[in-house]
Each structure stands twice: as C-alpha cells, then as structure tokens.
Length: 148
Image (cartoon, rainbow, N blue to C red; front, side):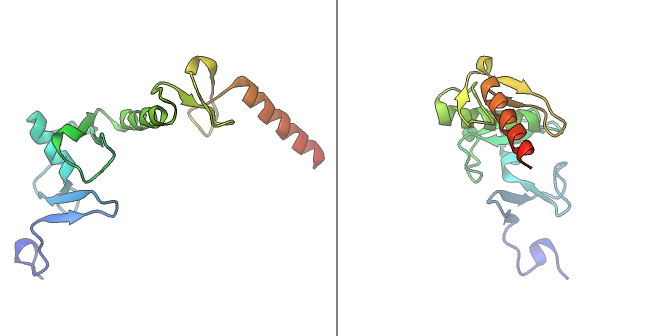
C-alpha cells in the first residue's frame, strides 16, 4: 500500500474534520495527531506569533466559523478553561449585551453576578442562580416529595 503523495487518493495533504475544521499533513509537527495531520488554525497561529504554541494553548475562532483561519480571526488561549470562558462571555454578550453577566440556571434570565449566588455541588463546579429562584426550586422539590 502506498502512503502520502504516492497514494492515488492523495489530495495535497489537506483533510476536513467532521466539524469542518481543516487538517494539514505535517508529520514532523509536535502537535501532529497519530495520522500526521495538524489543524490549519494552529499552523496559522504559530506563523503569526513566530514560534510554536505552548502545549496547553488552544486556538479560538473569534467569529465562530471554524474554517475561517485568517490570523485576524484567531485568538490564542492559554488553556481550554480560558477558551470556554471566552465562549461563555460571547453567549452572554449576544443574549443580554453584558459579557460579564451570567445566566440563572433556574429562571434562565441573565443578571449581574452581584445579584446571583454561586452554588457549589458535587456534580458541578458551581452554578449561578438568584436566591429567590433557588428557594422556589427547593420548595417545589419538597412539595413533590410530600405528594409521593
């Protein structure tokens, strides 16, 4: 079996992932997957800063179009948690016009963090809700348990 450029199905070293992101064949790249391909956005970001990205760095597409790999659209995040924070802030900005506001997990309305309480649970790092919404939720749970 022939590999790489010698294979009849060779398409110039470019492949498209299931979500639309574009892979480029770079077998010697430190971030290359087992199939020797690297995301094109990583290569563009590395070219823009002139050096390899740190190990935990994640490339974020500012306009949320994963095939738009121009350097002006890419933001280099220090890790995945910062990348997720960017997405959360973009959702808040789009929904209510305030990037720092959070959504109440009970009433689903956005509000300032100063008006919300962060509840910590075993299953979640924490969820934000109004104290009144949380109180109503637990009252409803108690009523339902009494009915059973």
